[in-house]
Length: 143
Image 1 (cartoon, rainbow, N blue to C red):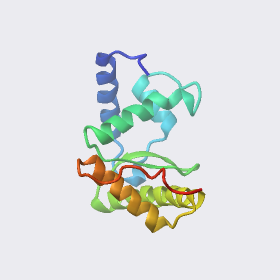
Image 2 (tube, rainbow, N blue to C red; image 1 turned 120 degrees about the vertical axis):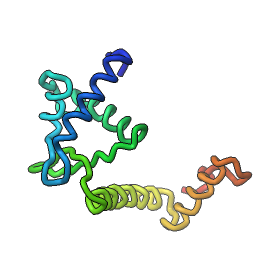
Image 3 (cartoon, one colour; image 1 turned 180 degrees about the horizontal axis):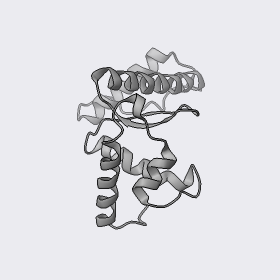
Image 4 (cartoon, helix red, strand yellow; image 1 turned 60 degrees about the vertical axis):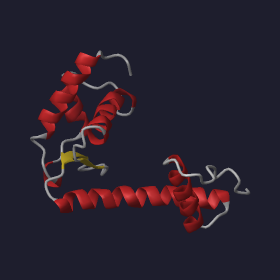
């Protein structure tokens, strides 16, 4: 990941933002390959490993700069876009929430606890991380 200097990363993020400004709303998605080529000004070598830096930059823009970058993982018409409306953002958040809950359900099944119990334990962990004196581990769940 340190292939790019700080200045190069800034330039890449600037290009990424510029390209995404032309892709506002879910009907104006840009495919990952095309986005990669426009940002890095080269073809990608591998769809997964070759585009990792693009995903890193997108995550940074979402998490640090709070840019509302959404995506669709459809094989036919998937891609990235900026949310145009609250509905666009809510729809994307619903997809993320559904995927997260599916993964948490799998964790609950593997740990042999009910999903609400697992969520409660996670909430306690988050509270503990905020500095309150609450038990900090879910490792006491029997398998």
